[in-house]
Length: 106
Image (cartoon, rainbow, N blue to C red):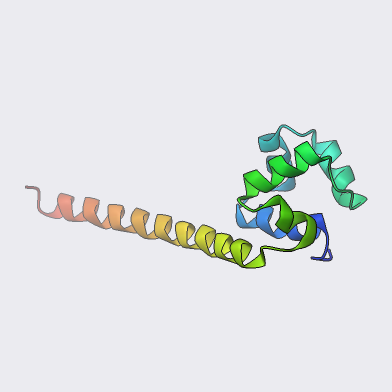
């Protein structure tokens, strides 16, 4: 999909949030069929839905509509990836601490 369109910019963000299209539609309370139609026909949703989608994805509506504010979006994607990495590290640290507690209880 062309990243010069609303959905071309939105789809990578949906994936970055580890959501399937179905999960995203459910989270947005949009019928899955409606989302599929928008995607298949590359139709931009009405302004209220477009704003809600931008908000849910953590970007500006201006970015989804025009591609402006790209730096903000790139930072948002980096933030999402950093939070995922932090979560993995925290889980690993918790596991190691639990193993240490079992080895030498205080």
